[in-house]
Structures are given as structure tokens and as C-alpha cells.
Length: 202
Ligand SMILES: Cc1cc2nc3c(=O)[nH]c(=O)nc-3n(C[C@H](O)[C@H](O)[C@H](O)COP(=O)(O)O)c2cc1C
Image (cartoon, rainbow, N blue to C red):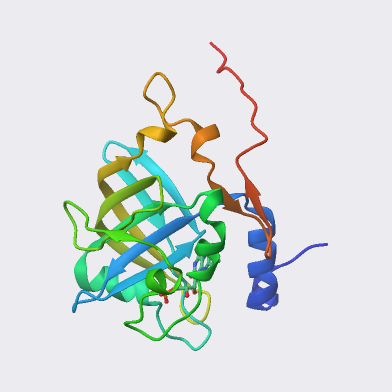
């Protein structure tokens, strides 16, 4: 099969892309609007792109109706967000918080999640998640237009909160304890359980 993007419909392209570029980590993003109302949503167009400073990018795409997602609007309004680790024990809640609620309604509350204040930014953290990263917005980079178009939210991590329970005996995050989930194509996800190690060539 070949898909030449300029002749294909956007849904076909989307399905091919997420079917192939995976597993994708999940940014579980808390943000607030100008009135301080909390929003929580997952985004699997997400990764980290440098460590000094620590740079993260996620992409709330343009909605089917041509509108922008609350997370994008909030981050643009406040310049701040929090990335909470999407872990296996919270997978139901991660999924539930992807519901498109009316602006201003709190997905965290509806999913029964506890929120705690952040230290450096206004959006709160998901207390139940073992890792939360407080971030400031560096830039929003829109690419394309219409439904599905990317809006790269480029941010810098200012503060990591890491539960000691997910650390190994050298003080590093142990993936066997953190147990993040990741998204594949369609409704398929994977766990961080089938791990193996390789040493870098000298
Ligand atoms: C695991 C998962 C990953 C998702 N990844 C994305 C994504 O990368 N970009 C996006 O725009 N929507 C993504 N969605 C859908 C959003 O979570 C959904 O549109 C959400 O309602 C947006 O919330 P907001 O309008 O409150 O910001 C994803 C949903 C799930 C369940």
C-alpha cells in the first residue's frame, strides 16, 4: 500500500501516522484559563527534545469543527502547564479526561482525581500521578490549517516532582516502578513491562 498525502483524506493520513509512529508517550496536561479554571487532557503527539534546558513538545491539533482545544487556549492565555505522568494504574482516568467537556469544566474532578497546587506555576498537579513536571511555555508553533493541523506547544520544564517510590537504589527513575503507558494506533495502548537492556557501543 502507498499513501500519497496530497491525494489522501486527512483521516487516512492520521490513521497511518499514529499506526506507524508509536508507541507514543502521553503528556497528561493540566492547564488553567485566565479565570483559574482547571483543565486536564492527554496528548500523545508528545516527546522531549533536549535536556539543557529540558524541552518538551506536545500538539493539541485543530478540532474537527475548526476550533482550538481548551489546553491550547489555556496555555496561550497563561504561558504555563503541568505534565503529569500517564501510568498504568491511572489508565482509565487518562482516557476519561480526553472527553471534550465544555470550556471551564474540570475533567480532573469528573475523573475523581486529586489535584494539588504547583510550586512555580498556576496549573495544579495530579496528586495521584507519581511524576509531575511544572513547565513554562516557550512558543506555540502552528503548522498547517484546518482540522488535524498541528499546534506545537514548546515548553521548558522548570520543576520535576518525582515520588521516591518510583526511584531505584541509585536515585534514578525506575521504569519498572513508574510503569508509564503509551499509545499505539487506534485504541491500542502498551505498558512499560516487556523491557530489555542494551549497552551503547564504545
Ligand atoms: C491517549 C490519548 C492521546 C491523545 N492525544 C492527542 C494529541 O496528541 N493531540 C490532540 O489534539 N488530541 C489528542 N487526544 C484527544 C484529546 O485528549 C481530547 O481532544 C481532549 O478533549 C482535549 O482536551 P481539551 O479540549 O480540554 O484541551 C488524545 C486522547 C487520548 C485518549
